[in-house]
Amino acid sequence: MVLFPYAGAGASIYRSWSKFLSSQFECFAVQPPGRETRFSEALLTSVGDYAKHASAAIACLPDDRPLILFGHSLGALAAYETAVELSHCGRSLACLVVSGRQDPDTPSKRKHISHLEDDEFVRQMATYNGTPAQVLENTELLELLLPMIKADFSMSEKYAGRSKIVLDCPVLALGSHDDDWLDTDAVKRWSEVSTGKFVERWFAGDHFYLNHHTSELVEFLTQHISLLYKRP
Image 1: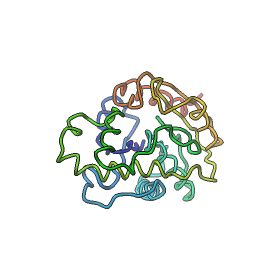
Image 2: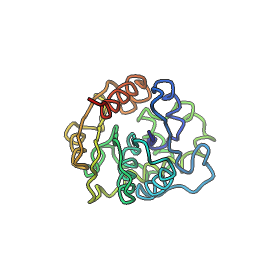
Image 3: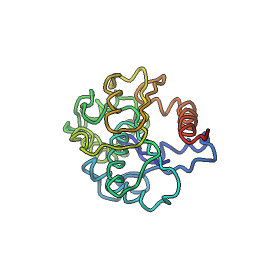
Image 4: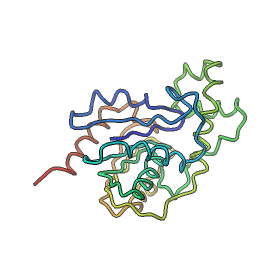
């Protein structure tokens, strides 16, 4: 299972998943450039570039076992576009899991903020409940992180929409009941990106439910994906 973080985050947001995943899953978290262990590297500027980098890394993984991609918010778009890139190479997916994001052709309900001056951008971002308070209150740290965060928001805001390529893998679309940026119709339209089986599931919590209901989310994923490979 390969995990894609949301905007402004890195691979470390998935560190706790190892406590809940069964031993049948081997988990890898994508670390985009410009953050954490790759802080000094040049930032990505488009979801397409993100997918090309991710698919090149995934191509190095063994191809004799099922491959699952999971992404939340911006990560959902990156996971989807990576699935499209992998399809060019003939690499099939066991499942694409998209969380906390409208379907590719429906613009986000969140207003665009990446163009704002830093002070106003931070004020808007603080209302999203996704950045730890200690980061927002640390002026020096925030100054270092802002270029990366704004670049991620810009990628999401400038995303061009669904690929013409139709996937053939199962798609699992996840949302949370108190996420003001989602609506049920847009989540259901993720079914259009693939001819494979489509399932949607809703959880308690806001847009960042995955950080507060991690055990429930991972348990559901483990059970759902295991059922895909359960033999009669």
